[in-house]
Amino acid sequence: MSKFVLALDQGTTSSRAIVFDRAGTAVSSAQQEFPQIFPGPGHVEHDPEAIWATQLATARAAIARAGISALDLAAIGVTNQRETTVLWDKATGKPIANAIVWQSRVTAPICDQVKAAGHEATFRKKTGLVVDAYFSGTKIKHLLDSFNGLRDRAARGEVLFGTIDTFLMWRLTGGKVHVTDVSNASRTLLFNIDTLDWDDELLQLLDVPRAMLPEVRGSSEVYGHTDPQLLGAAVPIAGDAGDQQAALFGQACFEPGSAKNTYGTGCFMLLNTGTRPVPSTKGLLTTIAWQIGGETSYALEGSVFVAGAAVQWLRDGLKAITASGDVEKLMAEVHDTDGVYLVPAFVGLGAPYWDPRARGVIVGLTRNTQMAHVARAAVDAMAYQTRDVLEAMLEDSKLPLTALKVDGGAAANAMLLQFQADLLNVNVRRPVVAETTALGAAYLAGLAVGYWNSLDDVRHNWALDREFRPSMDARLRARLYAGWRKAVGRSLDWES
Image (cartoon, rainbow, N blue to C red):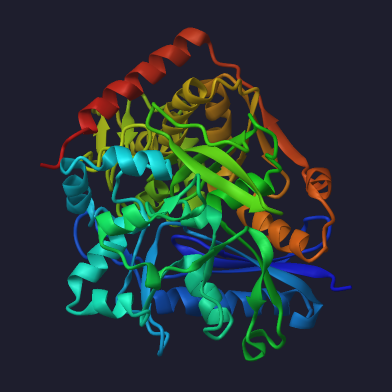
């Protein structure tokens, strides 16, 4: 029997590939960053060819570093930045244009038109989402509107749409498979989360032809096999989930009320709500977590657009640090932020505010302020935004949260996680394997081919690295959070 599973984790700023063994341990990995394209304020794009090149290169490198061949792989799982939108020519496989990234606000005017026409409630009811530039549907419309004749070609099936998972699987199978899973489909504004199908009314409202859309499948099944020329063998592609749902799965959050928070480019908290969708009245998203064996699980999600990206801004924009990992050393130079708050609304604010016109602010500056205070405020902002989301989540779900599992790159920062525990007044649990997004994709793929037998195998593999327990005085907690809410108020509705 094959010994390993390969996970392809295509993220917002880099592509990764990790080889996992049966214990859920990373045997080898490879990672490559790729360029971010900023055509204008709040607009973000990627070159799909750069995504493909880096993902293929990291897959080959991870296999080589493990000292194995593709014949040793039981399956491949794919996980991805979810709402990022690619259109490509079916005949040539070439992208029509750059991918529009989930962070991009370029379609905010389209969203305003949809709301002004009175359609927001329809989208909310059918998709569980708010009408926002974050999601794929308005990005597709924008691209179809931008090229003469493109919508007619799409209606004939000559131009295809995909989120990044779909694009990668198309390329990996040599153009034989045009599919996505329910978790990614549920992020498009076009998919009905009750009927589990593309919704004709929503397609009509955004003028998106059904012929260009991928087939929607479960999250754990064999979709196709890799072109043998790419990796050296035909390996089954058997797992697919959006990055945050994959992380929820990798954290073994299978029971209603279990939750995880991922500190990546953005910050994403998901709460498993079981086999029924829970509508939100507090600015959260109702989304599909995964579908296995015909059973669909749902989640509530709070999406924060900028988290770790604020640390990248410290590195690339302010040149305050050389590498992202240096931020912990810099912030350790001061005991606290000395009253400084940084609201990283660089591309607007997501949950629970949903204000595309919000912009980043730094408040509370004095002559005593040092770069270390600003760095600490940038990191603290991840914890504050997480509390914003949790407050809404507990109100919507009526489910108690006794602990929060965490993962993602910034989960390595112990100072962040201690502050998070203090601010939430709950225990924060970091697993041994912090890259749970890739691990979740691996589990979904391995379960589909019998490499793992059941969810119990996944539960058994989860191991605690460190638990952070709250120790902050309640009055200080309240005062700090009140200051944050005041700072957020300064950032809202800034861009006219």
